[in-house]
Length: 227
Image (cartoon, rainbow, N blue to C red; front, side, top):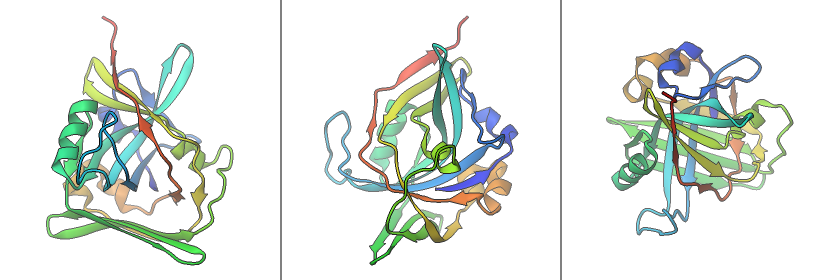
């Protein structure tokens, strides 16, 4: 997870109704996130050649107040996967913005080190996010940036100006692996548009590797604006 400070004005046109931007110590962030799905099932059914695949996404952080309780969630600018069927199903079921690109990954484990690399092809160029990290994970510190970034358990989507999609993502609290080195190459303008070029051209404010876990993405619902 490479986390970049962003001008909140850039995010407002992507903000689903009912939600508001969430901040950490007064700062707003977008995150470029790479991870690997394994043993994937859709509504309890697994599909051949679609059980294990990479994903890279660009996301930002929001919150939604329901019954005087804040739900903290994420909004995806774009989610990149390697198979068109995944794109079709995800966009249909969850109103997300998936796109299909050739992808690959490297996971390598040494005695005390992990190397994790994700690649996605844009035109003829391979983009990547990669890091080496300590093999032994550590617990999240309370009120840390890592806790903020990983502690958003809802997804929100922009359907139209009067309607948003909402779904819950269930997983345990993740530990993180301390980063030793990292590198990021991203064709921002072609993937995400001119608005995000300055943001992703800067050095990330933080980079960390989360251990991951089994997750469950719950059935989505719609939030309608009162008329």
